[in-house]
Image (cartoon, rainbow, N blue to C red; front, side):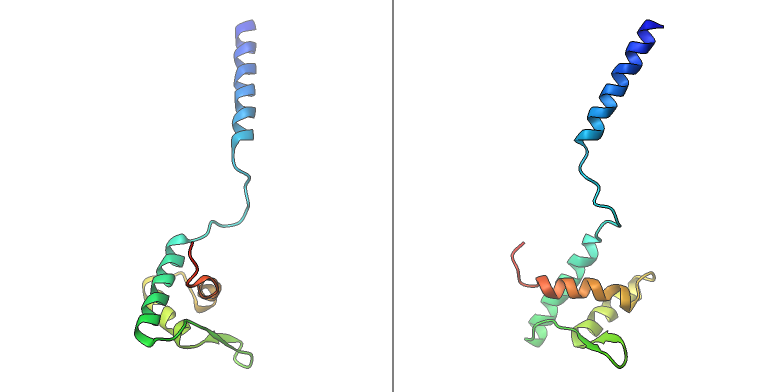
Length: 104
């Protein structure tokens, strides 16, 4: 029994050390890096073929985002991603536009 208690004590100590070594959980859903990268590539293509910066517009009367780049992204992503909606893409598009052209 003494060996069992020592073994359990060692396991508990090791578990506490392992927990302390884990990174802090930031909570929430992990960022979809593949989607961000894909939309960033679409932004590069957009600039190459239009000569314009990627932008988006927001119509307060329609309460919906829009614009040429926004529509381009929706046309490229929505047919291959049945889960996404225009609204769910909007945040990613805004982030890509905000960071576009910056060196990572």
